[in-house]
Length: 369
Image (cartoon, rainbow, N blue to C red):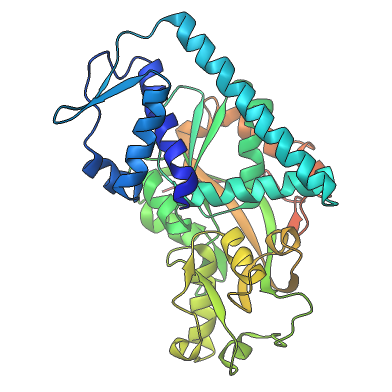
């Protein structure tokens, strides 16, 4: 993570703790050593964050005594701070927008770039310590760009709700659901023995449980390559060609499970694939790595290739399902969310999301073990 900006995120995190009252007047902030471990940064970055908070009048540092929250923050001070913060963000956004428009980008391209950047930050900081509210849907599972779109529009889909994202891979999502760390899991796990997706894994991980599986969409995955596919990558066997640099998805992701199975079936030695150990958490990271010239090919979503103006060669179509306990599927806010997936509203996204098919969206399977 770029430490030019991370200090601002650290300062904002602590600032919200103070303004919300979770950090009281006179309370000592965490030691710099502990925060460097939490944020994976240098002590200088934490010190810069503390300096920013001191400049705002929220903390005070004393040699040998650490850094403490100043006197009780007044409501008027909170409102002033919030107003200044909002004004600063609007100013920065307008400056970025003007610079991008002047460089020839249109509004749709700028919005897409912002969505991709937000996606990258989510992949860096997966967990949140914020308290869960009743209208927050905790999602864990495979990375998906439709899910990201839904998170940005969740308040419209389910009034007053929010979608908390944690991209852990398909298996990780199912495990999080089993451990009550998620309300829904997103997965696309192919079982070669039955030539079906998801259901065999769900049955194994949730024995004796009544589960609901709702089809979100069918997605197209394939080779993402540099524009024009200069390395002539058309089949899995081409990944071992001399000079071809590959970028992979992480172990446990549905895409990785699919690729590992295909490689095994074709008896390809993965050690011969340059970059096979170079793992990324999201389809966006795979596409970005190729766009930056650090790899020649990866396997991912068509939409990720389109977003980065890369070439795409289809390999397979796969169902992407949302999984939850049957009892939760009948309760809000999941009930309204699943009804939206069944409606015609989701089908209107086809023109916005190349590589997605919504024909079977909303189909439901109830597993009663």
